[in-house]
Length: 79
Image (cartoon, rainbow, N blue to C red; front, side, top):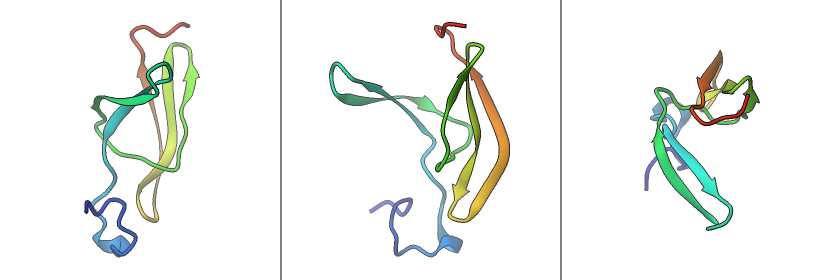
C-alpha cells in the first residue's frame, strides 16, 4: 500500500501526495492521467481565470499548508 493515503502513517513520516494530473472524461466515465505537476497539493480547488487554471494554496503533507498560488496557462482554454 502506498503511504500517501495510509491513515496509519504518522504525519512526520508522510512522503507527500502524488503529483499526477488527472482529467475526467464524463462521456467515457473514466479518469485519464495527463501529466505531472512540479508540486503536489490537496484540500484545494481550481479556478479558471483569463485562460489559466489557478490553484490557490493547499496542503503538501498532512498539516503542512502552502500560501502559494499557482497559475497554469491552458493551451486550448477559452479566455
